Image 1 (cartoon, rainbow, N blue to C red):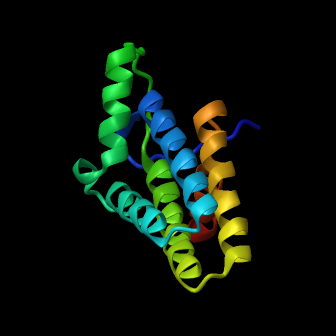
Image 2 (cartoon, rainbow, N blue to C red):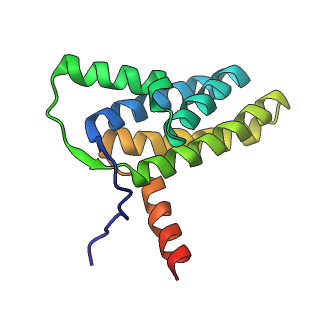
Amino acid sequence: MAHICPIGGTLINEPTVRVVAGLVAITAAVGIYFQSPIIFLFLAFDFAVRGFNKQGWSLFRYLGIKKVDIIDVKAKLIDAGGKKFASKIGFILSVILTAASLLQFSVVVNTLGGMLVLFATLESVLAYCVGCKIYTLYIKLVNN
């Protein structure tokens, strides 16, 4: 049986999502390298505004839209439900990473940061959304 992501009702452009995920992966990798709470705080902010309906405030979304416009990629509209859920997971991870880097818990920063880089890279390179898979399970649990 094919995987079907629950519908949230809002459409977004997949190429933009993939560019944003690439920016997240690069930024998180830099945050891990420098163990920087400022970088993780920035990621938390950007995830929060994308996940909690203030997309206009997202620098990554703005840059993603501009990049897609410049390279003139054909739009591919997808449902935003799973992506918004993934942004909320990214927000939680980024808050934890901010605290862990402030407390100099480098093992936590390296582990959770590595997960964030992996998930963002999967989205950017393969259009595989781990957060969407979790969202699907969440919806099934809530509806049963």
